[in-house]
Length: 472
View 1 (tube, rainbow, N blue to C red):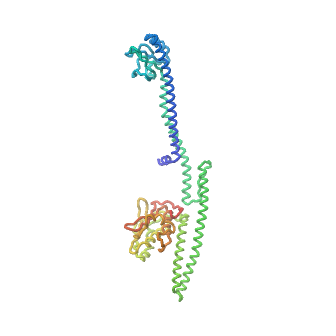
View 2 (view 1 turned 90 degrees about the vertical axis):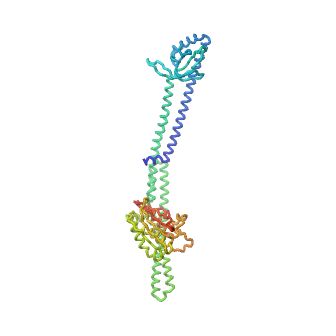
View 3 (view 1 turned 45 degrees about the vertical axis):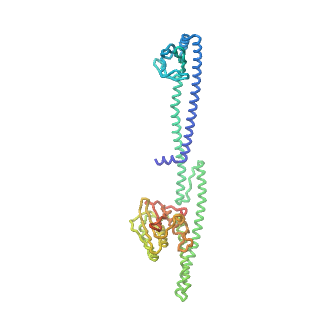
């Protein structure tokens, strides 16, 4: 049923359906016009024959009177054929003619009429169709002159009966043809979609299959493959440049930090351990921030590239939350913030423990950083109908709704002065980790005030996939 609904929703099926409906309407209109025009022409011919018969009999009546008219009607009736005559008195009793009795349900009329009558055929009475005209005579006599049109009537009935079936058959065959065309087109599109899904999952070497038919789908596939080749080269070059810059800068920064530590230690042991040692300590702190920034950028790059996919395994989110809470509890006490962990049952997902721990650590660090002294931050692990949620709620100032979409971008900080510690990569890394695990990073209001930052995972988490942009 689902496959049928999907087939009906395809653009190809809709195009074929519209075409079939227009074609069926055109055929019905054309056949209807042909039927109407043919019947009108045949009726006109029959009416001309009847009118000529009436004209001749009228002349006979004028010259020979009623008796001469009766003799003429008897003479013409002997020839048989399609001509029908009936001369009747006021009581509808037959005086002469080959039509008897007077047809029922017909009344005197100045126009042409159609009626049924009975006629012996092969010894049996057969009901047939005729078309004629009544001519009123003096003395309450009536003359009915008609033509048998039963064969034509049967043809017309067959035509009117066949027309709906013809249109219905056209619709049926058109729909079947549309379904076959749509199925073929859908199969080609599914191949493109599957290839696109593999590419989005990190298999940048995957390409759209080409059938060799040389049609527009093959042209589309070839253009997409050329575009993917170009994108792969650009992504590879960009990743190589980013990794090289990060690695090349991290190494001298680490050496600089080590030398500063050695210098600070020597100064502390000597007599000149005054202001110069303090400056060196501050330089070491600034170097740590730079190294932390590069480490975060490298971690986001690794997540983008999917290099951590091999470390995916079942893990307990409650255990991760407990470890992070224990790690940040001293910092929370130092800042005067109460850090609480709500107990929870084991919540199992498939993921990378170090990445999820780092993302949660960033959320907890932000909560402690922006919660004023005396405030509270709570780590929760909860299961719901929509999945398993790992959240951090604080009582700080929160984030305005209009700013939430952009705070997950790299190096974005809401402080115009940028005086508070940090690099603006915390939420960006959390968003990258969430996307890597097919999860969501949700930012909502806490009650009565504050922010709730939550990572929501599917109950049965699928294999991780790299992402195009950590901010997405």
